[in-house]
Length: 474
Image 1 (cartoon, helix red, strand yellow):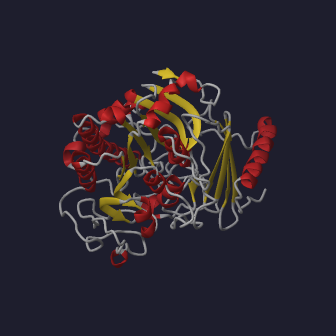
Image 2: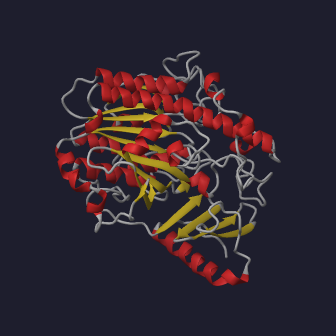
Image 3: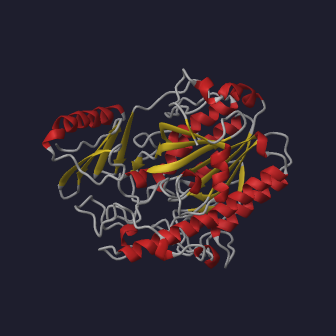
């Protein structure tokens, strides 16, 4: 697979993007596929996930541009997908959302669907919406099989909504924990998995679409988020005994990171065992294969209707997951598996089967799509276009998790600083080139004291740039 030179405004031609202006004139359809808790590492066979079975996502890899350094900025709430989706929908960073936790999308902030709607698109939303309900109807002109909340305790009994023009959903809001129950919604499909419900709704929309204007179809799956339950045939495709335990597996995290007692970390016993982690990973992969089948159905529906060649497909995830790495299970941390996510763009004018190693945040997708369709980027958007005209590069990446963890990466180096509610302090310094699994902490090594000082200075500089109010005590 070809590796591309990092994208800048000086080398757009190298990416074959001279066709983008024509693409904008033709107003391509857009299908945006969002997964839940899918890390980049190991979850796509075509991008190095040798154990997982994902033939349809692999087709997207072969047909498009895959970013291998795409990240979420972190989380301001234990339910990381809530702020992550807020940033994705608005194109704004973690410290500029409608509220600190990311629950509410501010009325004055443009959304991706709203912007495309004003540009002449028919906008349609399916699946999970983890932010305020009023923002859903502002973002989408129509939709179906809508799930308001964070997760389902039973994947086979999700409370769902049909689109209501007057946004009269409030009677059925999820409970305080963000969990949907069978009573939360105006309908459900007992015994049918939510992955299949959302996939079939997307295929139905494509098959029935008759309008002359282009469409923006947003399909937000709830897989591979726990509970990791799926049809048995997908689980049977994997031999648990052959699943590899992560090289950075630990029984427990070596120190208090501020969130060791969060729900995600209690899904299996602590200390972890190798056998328990292998089962979790097996089930995670099985959910990916189940999800992959629905993505294949969406691709086939586009092809059968003759729409595939004039459709931009965006495939990404809202956050990653540890699953045994560093003794952790969840996403409430700033290690690479929890913040690095898949990001693939497929469409006419984009080079096929290419890898882009530029740094990217998920909130850069919004302005990138504006580039593709030739519509102005709203003034409220803070992301940068990743492809097309007037692209830019991110040399430094800044990450945050609540008021406990901060991180910065630049070049080969990454610094993570911890300060818990109890005042406990810890520092980690990694060389990601030599130690991509973040196993060797160089912070206490005198040979790297100068590098530690440089990275701490960079952390503070980025904190100021992003108006982050929380400062780690040095």
